[in-house]
Length: 77
Image 1 (tube, helix red, strand yellow):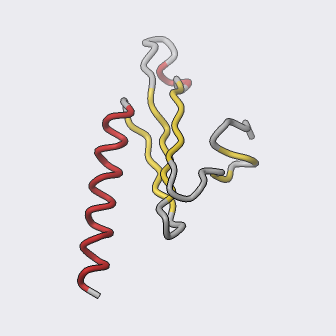
Image 2: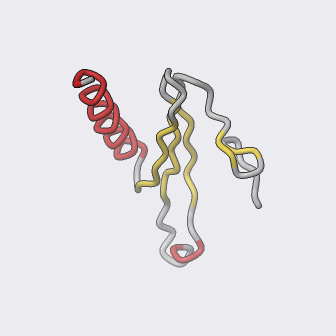
């Protein structure tokens, strides 16, 4: 298992309230050079959001949607 700045032994080390990301090229895309962004964000309540998308901007858009849904659920309680 490969250790990156985002993981230790395959577990995210993203601190609470922060984001971490890194770009990578998967084996199936090496010929084309297509890169993806792996993104982690740990909410202040400790819940981890993680995704892979072509750009950091797309990852952040998905995170914002997740936060909006999370906020709406908390309001309904």
